[in-house]
Image (cartoon, rainbow, N blue to C red):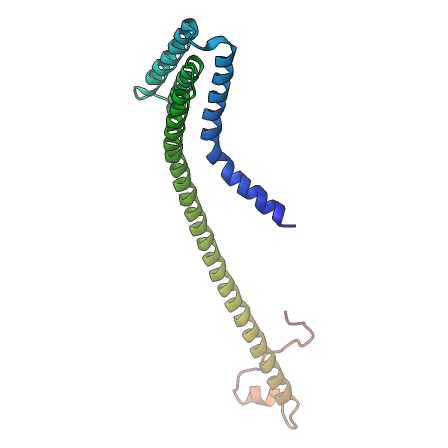
Length: 203
């Protein structure tokens, strides 16, 4: 029963690690298909891909400058620029050597950039887990203190009930002794004994 869950969890952990290689491989495959369909040594296609790649790079540079720069947009623009450059070279070249070299370079750069993002996410996740663990420990400590306090109050109440029961039993036993007269004790100057109602149930 637990084996499918473990397999899904392993795949969920490994899937993000394969995204950079899948992305660059997809660009290379599409570029070589484009090469086989007339892009080889096509100056017009090369100029178009160069212009698009430079435009994406300029957009990434503009998105990353200033205080209002957006890192996500800049990263997306630079990744698009690299993909277009790889596709242009792989589509224009007549062999596999240069496209494969650029594919390896692009994949390596993608993993270097992704590794920084993964490290940041891992640090944030660890910090969140530590905070959650500290919060749970604090709540558990408060619950233990409250449980001890409640137990002490219950024990005090039990001791009070036992003392009252013992006192009532002692008064009852003394009242049942032969010759015991509370009125004579009062006349002799002793304090009057309190009247106890034994019909009440103790809580």
